[in-house]
Length: 361
View 1 (cartoon, rainbow, N blue to C red):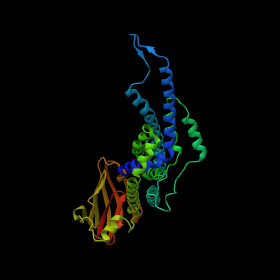
View 2: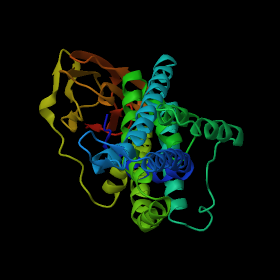
View 3: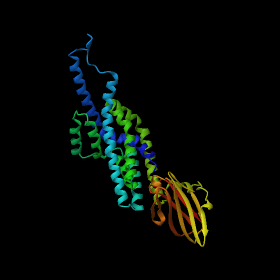
View 4: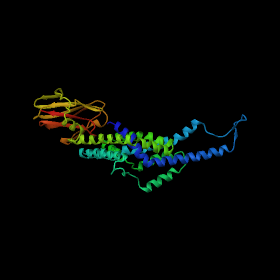
């Protein structure tokens, strides 16, 4: 499973989208903690103390201590956020695996996730008709979180970070759909964890810098991040279209305007005793050969070899035949394709990100 688009989505779309809802809570908590710390420092300064050598100290913290004081709350917040969202991703992935999502369900989840990201990208760019789209949590949840944020305890930032799982900030919904479609608790957790890690830089800036400065920085990045969000949205949408075998998928459009598909490899097909066997290798991140040349009119079996293969590549889908198979990490899997007719047969991973084809003559 390719998690890089998830990371980029978190870095650009998720950071800005989540910060719009959660950033005020984080900065408010840190501001109050800083105010309390400053009050304590002023009180200590009002009563000079001797260091034992006759030198009077004022209680001013060192520069390094100030940096730690600034970053520790942010670290606690992000750690809590990472924990809660990883657990949520694991639950969603487990649910997706337990109910054995059909090819159609996976396809629509992927397409829906892509469309959500595109909508949020258009909203971030301020496109008329989209700029007012903002997903906000119920007011009652926000009141609970604000009460927690008033605590000056050391665990307050971490508790706040855990609690943000209750706040459905924009792009998070689409990433949750991807976690559900993964059908695996491990990949569901990894999807949400990578997304949260992508949002971390902006939250760190929000926690360390003044709110006004953070707002200016966000405004300057609006155009660039909006374009990246759109790119990631179209990437995710295309994966769903590939999974559906749609003529609107990028590979099909490319072929229609003159881009040639990979050359068909006849060496992967063997005919013996009236039966055809096609052999491909599923590696982490790709199927190979990309295009197999097969003959029509005879019973055909596809043999898929794996060797320490990981990710969504192990969930193999043949959309037109309604076949969905989970491949082992290592071994061979035989998939009966029936009697093939002339044309083209596409297959893809369960997330529509990696694909291959069989050219039938």
